[in-house]
Image (tube, rainbow, N blue to C red; front, side):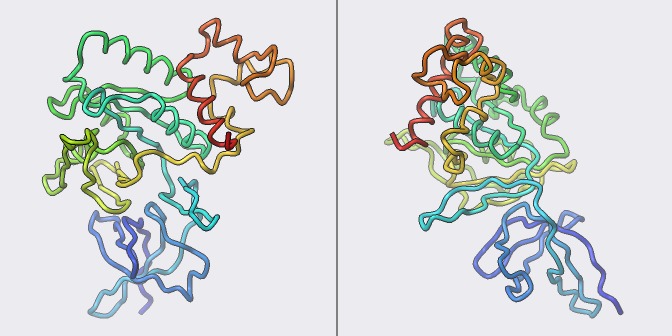
Length: 304
């Protein structure tokens, strides 16, 4: 009897194999037969073909790997790259307004990484229940800057549920890779949206003000309705080390309308005279905060 073939997603990867998320929502562990997939290193989010044995054992075996639509990667110490997640629909930059405090540089770094990999991005700001005087303006400025950059922005509170329905609609039916500082409430969000009570939550260290990691590897968390969350614990920020310094400006999409007015065609929008982007910053057509983030990232990538 011919084995029944179906498709599954790699939910998480471990040393001896991987855990699959099957179409019926259940999970199954499989071994990775190296002789069949030479050169392929599995990643969370990979879509694979599987065979279920026709005998009583019902053993699931890998039968093929589908091409990746996109990947989120980071550099390794040996000069190579590591795929963090694959086949992503949207990159969720999950931060908190307070405890830990919102850092715009963190947000802009994540947006640049998502833009470089061609992944749609959404910024979610948690803990708005802790808002103080002046925070409304902070959130408004962030939302405006995100819109100019081609990203979405939503303010929520995992504690009282504010804004979570809107966030759920934006994520519905999509595969989402999430990153953010520890303590921002990532696992609490997965618990809230997924209706699960088996997810560990961490806390912010009173000594350092930083969160304690509660998950140890990229994993898929089904949230129902076809929505799948890829949590990336230990990865507090999407990496930018894949971006060439001279192409970083492409990841700041709001620069594009102003670049044609630069005096030099290869303008890097830093110290060059008659720069159209800098002129736009002075006119407030481009966010000064975003521009400062660009300069910092440019220096970092240039090795300055």
